[in-house]
Image 1: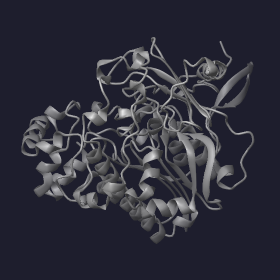
Image 2: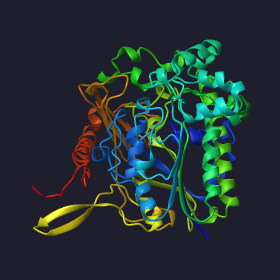
Image 3: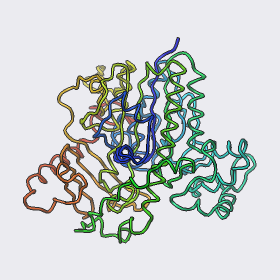
Image 4: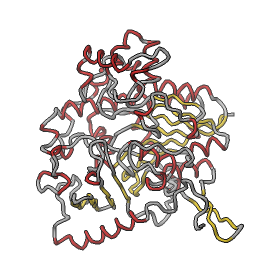
Length: 507
């Protein structure tokens, strides 16, 4: 008997803004359009921390960065911290993880073991591209192997100089391949091999095999792609699908007008759109979306053929955004402009009242929704009351989205979102730390270590072009937002972290 299905379909570094822009005539995305027509699109969904590992840890656990401990890339998520995958697995679900999971530091190991996080079956390939996908190309498409080698950009990954059972110096092979394919060392290029050989297609193939090979019982699959993360590398056959004339010009660099302390750094000497071909970057980025749309269609067709689509909780999201030359910036991290922090989130399930919803939602809500839809009690921690008397205390920080999917929202919903950034690989100091409070109307950001503040009225200035933080007319609003931000920062660990806990309130 076919059981229930939960699909977490993730992409990497996709801002909600670019999915919206794509729909304005830039590139046709029929499968995303179909998902949107069936589900709820949360137009105000946010990353808790706009960088890969912290965001993904919050999705898996339903906890804040402070609670699960992955406050920046470079930390591994402790598998003793409860994940919803573990809960599904413990309740008889068959679970699979495919592609980029990034609960472990990517450069630490070319063969990471993700089974302790609650996965029965895994097929891992992440940013570096070394490991399972690359080995598969060598075995099955040797004519494209050298080209695939040239796309490996994380040459700092441990183990490359002693790779595989033959103890090869893979790092030397990669560098030689990049000399043969020099364009592969750039930040935007067309893949030098066909789409069916790509890392993206490899992820879909294994996820669909998993869905087909488990015809009965309850299934969970996390299908998680590396693209459209930089370098922007779509298959060549998708590039012509992008209508170049419809691509909008970048939003101007607001931070250059009246620089706050944070932007007084050498790396902000000028806007990115003056230094790179922004049209080409955007064209290749949108071509990657076309390829991902194709893969989404393959997954949905597989679910339909397996008789699973009608009883599926389907969650589509990204870990964080990509500035893509808006504000004269590329990437993500602590630059908390809208394309950095606002993410796509489309959710469908039986009984969904399709349409857009404006509530403020975040990554931690995904775990709460899965627990609720699967009918599994969420994790708790013990609280000491008196000797021999333990009271379970809930730890999920997110809220189930099911009432919103069914058109019966809980009231009141949250009034603001806390977004944080800590060290990046560009700067390991409080100078790169930021804390943001996002409300329906405002974005207020405090940069640490004298970095200054930003305050934008998003209703009247959606492109964030006028920083009001120093305007006396907005001093009362600024003070109220700062108070709310301090409250959220102080309470960011509540209900409480489960890490190495005996009992709350004990001694």
